[in-house]
Length: 421
Image (cartoon, rainbow, N blue to C red; front, side, top):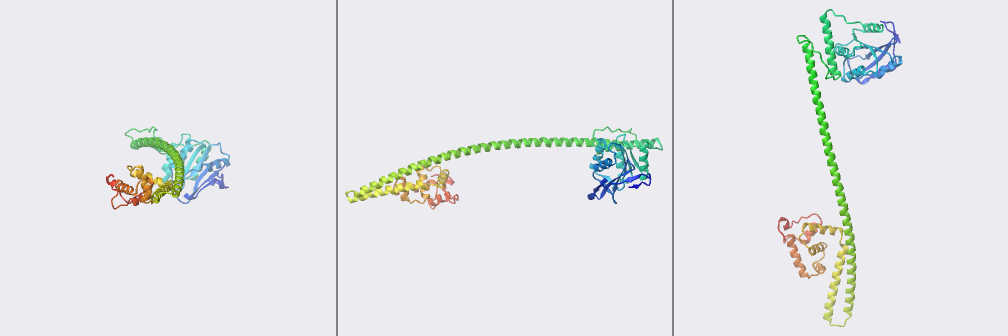
């Protein structure tokens, strides 16, 4: 604590009454003169721009000084302050017009020339019951604070009526400009002086600026509304598409479930049929073997016996081929038959069966026995199938079917060029 050399009142400091702004290169410092005068200054050695207020520090000072419910007498040293951010301006007007603190008087001193218009604008736009004074130095500022405490606020003295009128118009201009810029008051009434007044062009320019800003704000508002409307329409469209996609997926899932169920039932049925066929073949083969044994024991012409035995053995071989075919038919074979049928829908069931046997490496004789025809007849069928599928004489039916099963069909049948078998 030390004494003011102007008033001889004690000056109180507190390390909690300081806000450090290291990134901006300055500290905000608050002190108390006497019991109730608040001294506010910026501790720096270079010009700065105010970026944001520190209202909490001021509240702390008021609370520590038992001044929470009393009008604030604020004396502000403006040295080194050359500008302030738009954010700071809005915080000031919010503090003045939406008060959580009560100001009795605000006194600026050591105002830099670059900041003088800003200070005068603030003084012009505050409520009428809040005096804002701009003094030359600390001595004048402190004396004005003591006068205010005594109920005395010095009025401006003008040398002429013209000076008074000019000062009034200047304050009116700055107040209108401040409300327009700081408060965004686009609908305020700007009082124009007579058209022959030398300040008329300035007020008219201010009115034109207000109209331009108002029109621009309306256009921006319209753009925002349009963007919002377009966004809602796009969102609705996306929601419709999403719901439609979900419904489609639901339908496809239901369809796949049905197909899966049908295929499962079909597989079960085919397994039962395969079991029945295998049983029947086994029974038939057993009967043929018994018949073969019986023929072998007969006392008949040897040539006839040989022919009968040969027929029985051929029939047994045929049944064994049939049995192996039914047992060895795999999922891959089923897929091959499906693909073959899609590729060549004009093939009948016997021809599809022959193609499968060819692909499974059965020889012509075995295939002929399986389908119940002669070997020569089988060779004729293979020749007709070769042409029916659309292969040239240089293409192998076996190679084509193997390649088709491997999903890498390098052979191009003639039927793909429009030639039908």
